[in-house]
Image 1 (tube, rainbow, N blue to C red):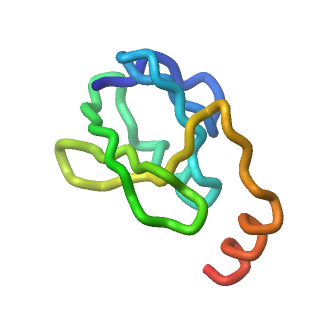
Image 2 (cartoon, helix red, strand yellow):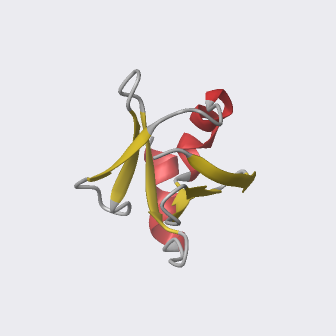
Length: 83
């Protein structure tokens, strides 16, 4: 899948129509994305994030949840503090 829309830094819509909210700590990774970047969506085990978008070319990934979901604020704050 490729990027269909990424006009907000924290939301990406893929060519299959799925929309994803990017983990705040991973947003900087999206700066190198190109419109032609190919992704796969992978299930992951994480306290907060349910999936990852994995760049098929280099294996890098960003953690995500469905765009329709909201981050649990206290869990995000704790996680970002702890690194």
